[in-house]
Image (tube, rainbow, N blue to C red; front, side):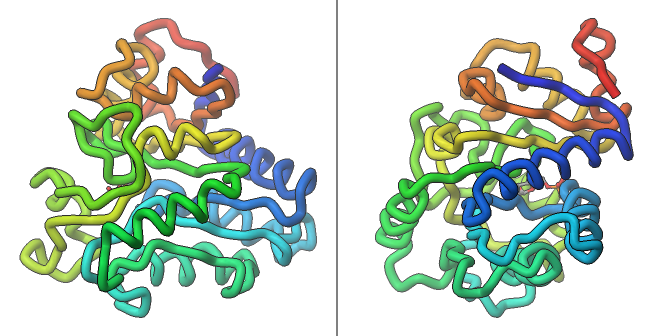
Length: 247
Ligand code: GLP
């Protein structure tokens, strides 16, 4: 089932409530965190609640969705670095409870196999963003719904869209390690966040279109516990389609 919550602050509060609920029910929960600009307000709200003593992540574990191939965890542009800086650090998740994909692993294929074993212990909640072309993690259009963690080539549009995070387009890696669509679907609960008009078409295809590898996010329709939080701009197509609205 997919629950859609549209709004700005209300939607972020809904997302934060969901994360807090998961950690309250299971203090040593494993949380999967997405990188990118979209979830930043959610992470900021969670950090605020942690500061206020409303939620405690000290026993929680963190896993990642994806990582650029070739970047070491201490590289400023690596997703591991971004997660420590913007998520697990502010939330107070212990370093030894963080297990992220190693972009600089000597054998990337073996690293993906290792990561499948890590994830097989169970992900209680996976936070996701969505790419403008409908990708989730780095599963680009055409990805099979049963795909597992593996090395993937990035679409030129994805490299371009993510360019702001890295110094130049030329510096942006052409490949990544990514949880597969099938891997993501094994998380117990999923929280997808979309913000901005640039995501409206992808979100509409994901939620209202057929389940189709052309839009990898549409596979979320196969999961039984998905919450989507979107601002008005990202939800524009859903409104026209008469989708559920609740704020
Ligand atoms: C990258 C990440 C995705 C993320 C997407 C959208 O491609 N691999 O996990 O969802 O970017 O990022 P943003 O939220 O910055 O638009």
